[in-house]
Length: 439
Image 1 (tube, rainbow, N blue to C red):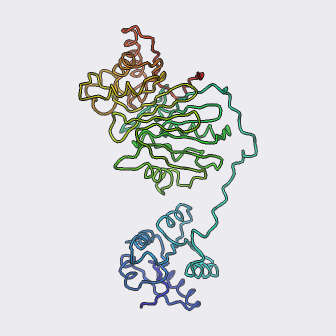
Image 2: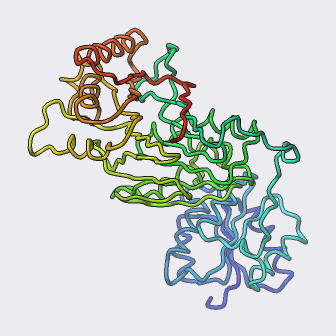
Image 3: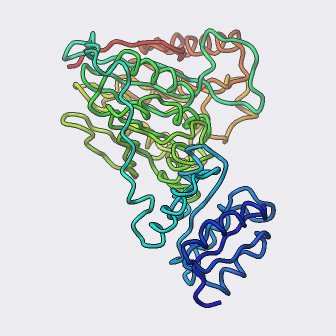
């Protein structure tokens, strides 16, 4: 049948026949199919003007059928309506992502169903013709935003998460915290965030609850290991239309920054499967220097860590802060291992360094060459090779107890004492704040 108007695909014969009888009153030529595994073969043979398909069917789902049709050059012009008893907003979003023209929820209103089908066939109704939903303005929107307590020449650095993941999540609590990588640098009117591990969730709650309506929020991702991106979808400002959020990071041959954002924020497999209401843009970078805002520079270089990992230098108010949460400094670097030299050059003029110190010294021999530094290696490197005045030891392994981390801090202080150095070392701890004055 070369001039078929509608093919209805539903494993429930009674539902399919009901839809057929409703639409036959409008003089369409219609066929039904209850075996979804035959769908593509039948669609290719009949080439209907419109497919109406259920989602939940054995064999191929309606989403599978929609995707297959829209990806086939010979079939992609066929219109598709997805129907389902699923009322989840994310299912409608998935249908749109796969190319469907429309989504109708069961049980449908018969007169409206007829109108929707006619409009889709006429090309006057589709996802693109629907007005976008009006975002819900948070209840606190009418209240005045909270004024920052920072002076014009001050900035505040806050640790929101500093631990790594292990194959088994520890049950014990820790004075150093259990949340994964996230650090914020805040000025009176701006905020810059390094990484989106689980620590970013608490930060997001604070921003929204305090009504800190920054004009822009910058989130710099170092790499795509799960402990650095797991909290992104739960960052509350994403779902508040007051905010503009700029996601920054380097792409990897296996996964682009856009892919990461799509799967973390927009995918139906996201931990928070609700579409953002904030304005979000994705900025892929390479080793280079970038101006984020007037007087605010961000420099990125690749770090010694598996996958495409970067470390960042943020320059603002005359201060330079380097964030390198995953970076292995070599104990005895050879001429062929120039990473230590490269890092020392990158740290020129830096006063505050947040650096990987994941491994206690006694464990380093068995864990070396995995992309993480030992405490003594980074402390000695900072003393001997850099101008750093404050070193924040970051990313202690999740399996380490507080007693072990305390011992790591004692090892760090031993290095400082042995060299009679003036560097100040801190072991990263959740909610730890550093108030700095601009130059």
